[in-house]
Amino acid sequence: MSATPADTTTTAANSAADSPAGHTAHGHGSPGYVDDKDALLKRLRRAEGQVRGIARMVEDDVYCIDILTQVSAATKALETVALALLDDHLSHCVAEATAEGGPVAEEKIREASAAIARLVRS
Amino acid sequence: MSATPADTTTTAANSAADSPAGHTAHGHGSPGYVDDKDALLKRLRRAEGQVRGIARMVEDDVYCIDILTQVSAATKALETVALALLDDHLSHCVAEATAEGGPVAEEKIREASAAIARLVRS
Amino acid sequence: MSATPADTTTTAANSAADSPAGHTAHGHGSPGYVDDKDALLKRLRRAEGQVRGIARMVEDDVYCIDILTQVSAATKALETVALALLDDHLSHCVAEATAEGGPVAEEKIREASAAIARLVRS
Amino acid sequence: MSATPADTTTTAANSAADSPAGHTAHGHGSPGYVDDKDALLKRLRRAEGQVRGIARMVEDDVYCIDILTQVSAATKALETVALALLDDHLSHCVAEATAEGGPVAEEKIREASAAIARLVRS
Image (cartoon, rainbow over all chains, first blue to last red):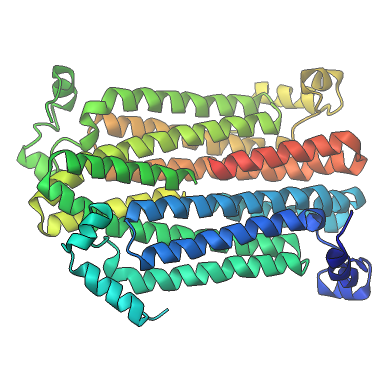
């Protein structure tokens, strides 16, 4: 996990993974996406810029259809972020929990399935 | 975001619906959403804030599932914006074009159907 | 909407189109998709076959992921049907209503927007 | 649809989970949904009936919007089937693979993520 200095410090507190703090917080160590953080943040900045751009189009009375095209693009960008987060979550949090098995594993699967349902329906 | 003076003037100028400006701009008068502009902008500001919040969650190593919940919320918010834009577009641009009829009306319907398809598939 | 002989017979009951019956029924003549009926029916038969195939896969204990691929395909097929219906509806029912204008036109737009919202959210 | 003798035997044979047959078939034992088979089949029969009903509505020239409502309902029904399959898949196939770990586990996660992406985008 070649974390950038920045990451290391950020993650430090938290990937004192097994710190009671970590546990009282969520009972999780560093999140599944920790290695893809920079890519995720780039994508999210871009999506934020797209949404800001849509507001500007509305202020400028741009034609409805042209705005709708941008809204679809921003929605797709967020979906891509969600799918990346979910893949990281399955590969790490869920995989680790199921490796241990037991009720924690079951809870993680339930949680992941609920998140997938929200995505599919949103 | 309550209409800034800037907005007011833009809207004013432009909801002189048939202003030559409007026409040279896009070959359209004021867009269908012109009366809902403030509501749309409020929604878009909120969506922009949601996306910024998601980036902050990633930076803070928040648990994947909690981030996914916010991504679904932001996606839903953008969908609501899209549906409002589309409704305004059908009620104004498309309705006016079909009232006139002819090839322009057909083009507007084709355009709207394509935008709906992009939404349904995004 | 020149109905082909074929259509006329199929539609007989109903496209006694301008029959009071037709009107009391829904206040509509023949539906917007009347000219695309055969294409729509072909698509729907195919979608029905896809769903039947998915049930067969479940009976045969086919691997989950292979079934999910078929479910996505069937869902996409239904979306295509919906988008075709919607395009026909806008091109005919809505266009005719808005050409006349008045409350009927407004109701048709409201109805179409609600149907689009159901599609986008389903 | 309560399991026909045929089903029982299929399931029996196959939920001899580690039967060579099962393995030669797909390199999988009994699928994750094996315990929910009857519920899944009931849902799929209903969805199949909904799609057949939509074709009948088209044949009868039912009003576009009323058909679209049924198409949205059938689409939602298929989504529910997909989410149930996915939950079963994560709870069984993926959980078992990740418990063993190694390349098989990674492949299962990749596969599941790809299936989720197809669902979210369909």
